[in-house]
Length: 187
Image (cartoon, rainbow, N blue to C red; front, side, top):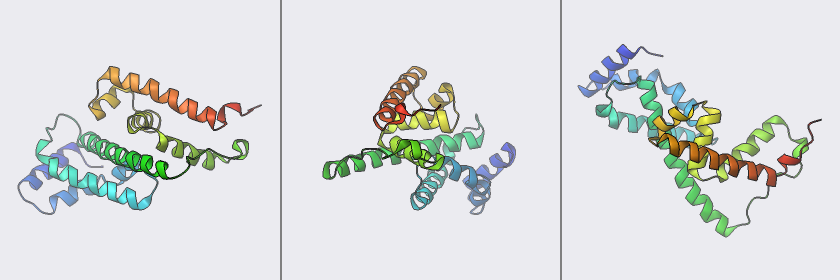
């Protein structure tokens, strides 16, 4: 990772027309962007497209960076918005597909799932949630953001984040119960 001072120098060079400065600037953050966007998709092709979208949006927004927060924090806010937009589009597409086909019913045998299979099942359940619900759960549980940081990343009020978190948890819990996860005997 680069220092904040070298980031600012690279940003200024980009804005002054240095064609190589942007590659130097973002080269130090590409891995973090990939890791962040992995939360939004497990499809490698889509992941690469989302990362590219983030890089383009960051480039187009460089003049708006105000140096009040670390550059990586600012980039993650943009990445979160790109991922959220992707989820909204995917949600619309999924709703359209569900009109044409039967809805998924859950796993056959919950008790025999490996942790990896259970993780993939959870990811599929998250995909079925509305984008706002999915976003707050992902930021809270996977990115380990507190509600204040979620509010900062999304631009939502703290109250809205808390309400959204509560509703999203209730919806996911209901989905887990319907899929048979509430009846597992852990003894």
